[in-house]
Length: 64
Image 1 (tube, one colour):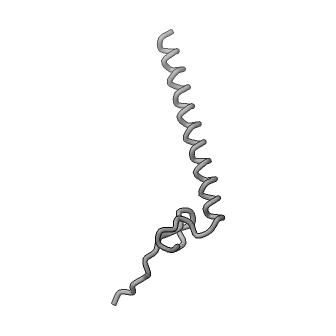
Image 2 (image 1 turned 45 degrees about the vertical axis):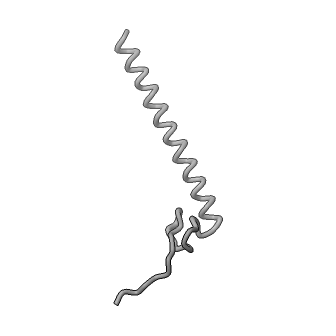
Image 3 (image 1 turned 135 degrees about the horizontal axis):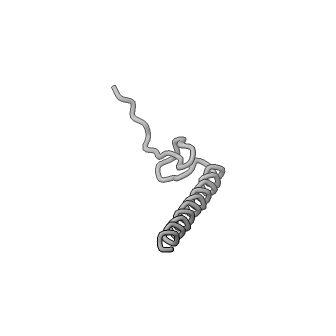
């Protein structure tokens, strides 16, 4: 016989069970997720900027 768990979600940062409809288990996880998302955003921006600069350099070298 399968055990039925109450309807729930999981914390977007640590994965702990939370009440259905809630995104985070506490404010610490909310803040950590915000910081992690910001770092990811900055890292993505740095990557795309590096690719853009490399492409400009390659095109410039190819033309001249």
